[in-house]
Length: 212
Image (cartoon, rainbow, N blue to C red; front, side, top):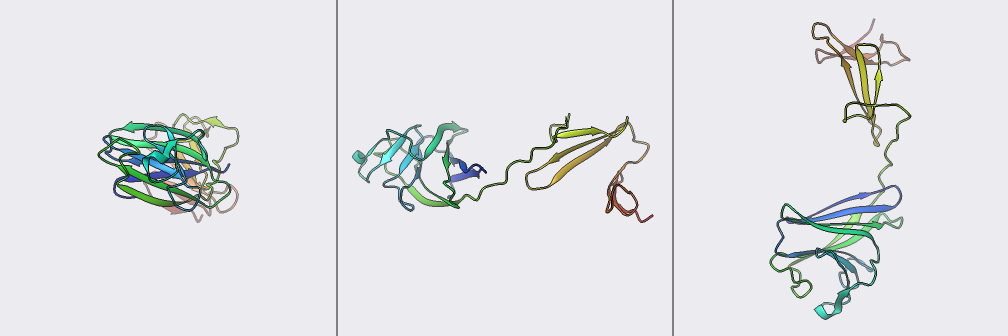
């Protein structure tokens, strides 16, 4: 958002948007994130403030900023201070839209919201195209390596570990035990399960064309 404020978010396949605003080194001040009812205007929005409360921002005068009787578009909220940074977490329903309008504001030297008016304020249009759902692998033996989902015992020496990721990538690892005097290889065939015609990664770190 600027040199002090960072917004993180994830648009989930069920329409929910999970987000986190981090305002760095701001324990003496306050931070807020609002979901406007119109455009990118703070006035008229509900705002989550670093004191853990949601406010109705009915006008610029502090007397018009009041505790909200409901959370409005906020589905869940939390605020913490982590390593001197103010962290505001929330979720909201994206409503099938491709953009979520937010307003971010903060004050660095006074925690007296709303009397201490913001030093910085930003309208932040956030793209919220849904991320693909996580891939659920078919039933498999859970991998003993935390970096992977599944494992398969190829034989008494060789074990294959793998993970199918949501972007379509497959990460894999072949482990051949007690084999420092020999070599190992894994190939991706062009046809069926034939080694000939494939490219193979060999334990010398090279990839070979296996033409015959």
